[in-house]
Amino acid sequence: KAGVTQTPRYLIKTRGQQVTLSCSPISGHRSVSWYQQTPGQGLQFLFEYFSETQRNKGNFPGRFSGRQFSNSRSEMNVSTLELGDSALYLCASSMDRGWAEQYFGPGTRLTVT
Amino acid sequence: KQEVTQIPAALSVPEGENLVLNCSFTDSAIYNLQWFRQDPGKGLTSLLLIQSSQREQTSGRLNASLDKSSGRSTLYIAASQPGDSATYLCARGGGSSNTGKLIFGQGTTLQVKP
Image 1 (spheres, chains in turn cyan, brown):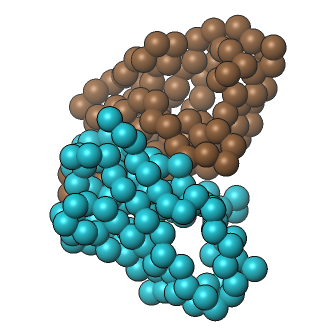
Image 2: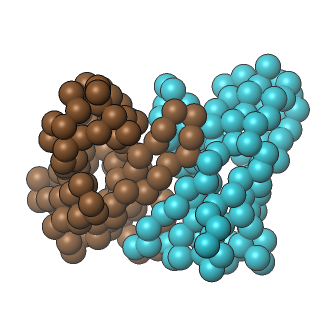
């Protein structure tokens, strides 16, 4: 069974640009969550989607948005990039929302210059 | 505020040693607790998941315990090997079954010397 895949793996953008990251969950998983990982703040929850609906949102500005498609694939978008958005963005999938084990993808390394 | 703390932040041990990584959390109303491993620049690999109704889980040389009353979880690694060198993260599940949101500790970076 294929694991969680994320594309692209690496990305370099300039301040003010926008970026879209993609996540394909494990087949059969309906829940997708996104996390931002930085050396200073560690892993922080961005948002969670289940059956195309955002079920939970972390404490991030409105520049961060996401969506989930009917095939459970998810995208997150960051508009008007800032230097502080440079981070490893991780996607996790699970069978359900509460009790299920979370499986993470390899991440997308975003560098904002 | 739900917080997760991991102590120590870094640990260096000789190969073959048994070791314990600690994780503490506020708010005992957790739904589950999951331990992950992260290699430099990589994603997270799930090691063990403990449901709130369980006391411990085992996988190979790894054993994780959960004590909700004291707000603590430990990850025990037996007979450590150089390949175990990585950052270990614990994460508590949200306070209900309606969310898969995880709250992470800052991690313990383990180095096992040959």
